[in-house]
Amino acid sequence: MNLSPDWVREFKVHNIEAVHWSVVGSFDAPDIAIIKWARENECIVFTHDLDFGTALALTKAEKPSVIQVRTQNVTISHLSNMVIPTIQTYKDLLITGALIVLDEDKQRIRILPL
Image (cartoon, rainbow, N blue to C red):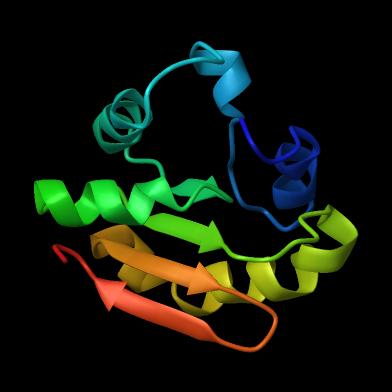
């Protein structure tokens, strides 16, 4: 919910299937509900919320994969050139289970469970 629904269109342009949480769940759903839904539906969580990494660590979850952006500017025009290549490059890791944290300077990749 903390990233624009317009990301769905941006992902589609790059042949990446996506759904915005606002279409499938409640705006006030707890993070654990989003994690559960993503795991059951074999989806990756793309978020600006730092709590997802903590939730994965506390539950020792093997899935879902999470891509977490840690930038002030979360616009598509700013992040797309960073996010799309990361998804394409690390597709296999994202399928098996990973936490990828992105900021302007670097990428950190952790294999799940944490």
